[in-house]
Image (tube, rainbow, N blue to C red):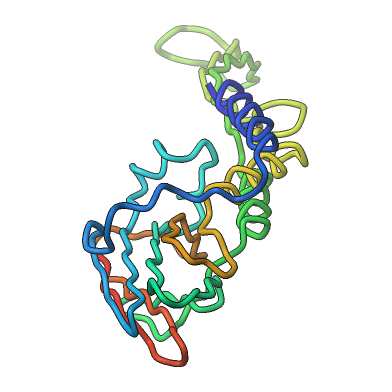
Length: 224
């Protein structure tokens, strides 16, 4: 199953290279159609927290293993172009004092590759051992010495060869997919949308706050 998974990832990455660059996602008709939204100076922003289960369906890359994924849409003012940059976003997690900046597709893919390389693909297999003892006389069996047999379990690594997700090809394919689906950056005059990857696990039940700085002023969106 793992081999099929990573083969699909490589194929998806190859297909992504055919495109001109990051495409993001199709923006909804308005910011209010996202789970949370805010507006300031004519620019609106909508955001939806992507659950780990949803991430498994949306991405071939196992991005939920390292990150919290948020779909974000920016709706610029009709009379003024808007600069969109990942540096304008910050994520705060309830119960912590840490303010997290988004990770680029390159950094996220490298993190996933590192995790894949460090994971142990453990296999358990039954073993039967035969041993000889030189003990004394056994009053029950009437034997002296004899043969002992025992059943146990042997633990070994998954075998030779690179682990799925740990090669440079895997990293490149993941980077391509994450980049293509990420929030497009630059000066925009029409709505844009895409995913942002924050380097923190998406623990169930924790409240997260997404902050977006627009012309020096913060827009705050609470995600659950």
